[in-house]
Length: 186
Figure 1 (cartoon, one colour):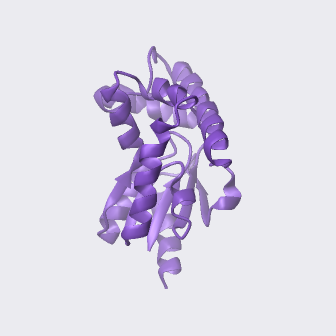
Figure 2 (cartoon, rainbow, N blue to C red; figure 1 turned 135 degrees about the vertical axis):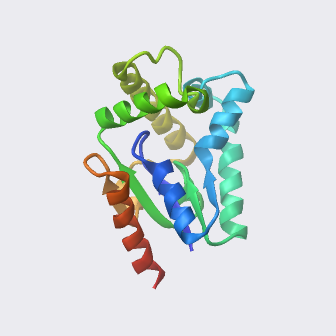
């Protein structure tokens, strides 16, 4: 079984994907991490890299080809990415949702604690700045994925399981996800 995970920034995707991979003893592939690395190699923030992708499809294509190949050659893994459900259509598709203001507060907290790891954007000096950045990134995602693949990655009809983490702890959300995954395995 392959489990693909998507959702907006700050929803808890990475936390939940890590816990799920650890519990199942499966590898986890993080497409956002690859994109962050690629942006950094070009001297760009993730937001700048996404903007570049609106006119340069190679910024998405390399990661998308990689995940498509994973889906064709491997099994029993967790993959976290905006388009993973699309490129691995036989995956169990999870969507982790969150209210954008809560997401911004979560990301702001993480930026203060782990600023060297996120590479979000420039001039993120408050929760309000992060919220604006999230909204710009989401608009860029919509533009790129509609343009290149004619898909809406946030259309919930594509997913097998949807959970909103706005009012849930990581442990509460994980318990619901794990219960769903276990039912799907049998």
